[in-house]
Length: 321
Image 1 (cartoon, one colour):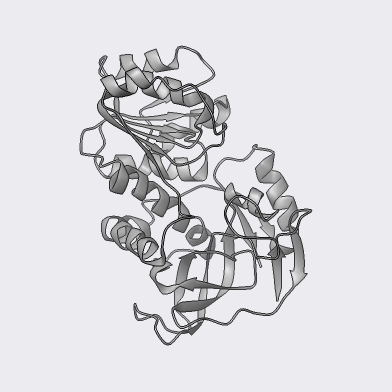
Image 2 (cartoon, rainbow, N blue to C red):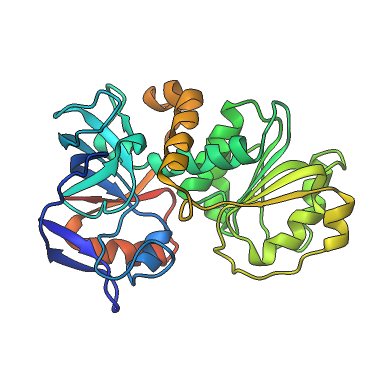
């Protein structure tokens, strides 16, 4: 089969053997695969998503071909599913059964491929770690990414009060209100923390999901309410930044780092289970959705990654085998 494989020089399309499912795995014929920011490092075997020689890709959709002997969930050949795991840039991929979910009846494979990582990541950040309550004010840093757009929608769906999204691109920022943002901010404007405080009546936000880190951390602390929860999901802006420890302590802010890379199989299954419990109906009905920016054939995966790296897209970039 053809697959996008990581090498020291970056992503390459190669012919490799079709994977065989382990006892806990579901084998899927891939119909569409989604690009994620982490794939850009993974293409070189970096970033915690495996070594060189591995197939890149964190989520995909397709039809079940085979199942392992220990698979739960009632999956059978022919089922239309969406999956999270590793190896989605390929004609066939395997996923642990606990990270496989049924597609909505009328959902396309393209739409389904955009969802697994985005919904799991943002539900985990907002609800499992952020403990978001109805009526609370939420800020999504880096809200114009696919995962960020999903965060806006989940926050609004589950009862957040004021929902704020940040983007440094004016064109993308203007689109965020279509996905649940009540207010949008530009973090290149030095006054953005004051703008957030003003919008919350001077109190500050209760939950911040930060995909940027680096230069946004100091401002996030400044616009936090007492007992705010800051969930560090990504580090697109860098891994270091100013941190006011006195303000952190005075506001009793919980600063929580999350990643999928160090979770056990059981933890990943539980993440999917609790997300599905809360969001199943909204996912399968299409209420939670992401815009598709552009699709590429699998053989053009290198060009697809270049398109993402250029940071000119809004929504998801897909590969079609």
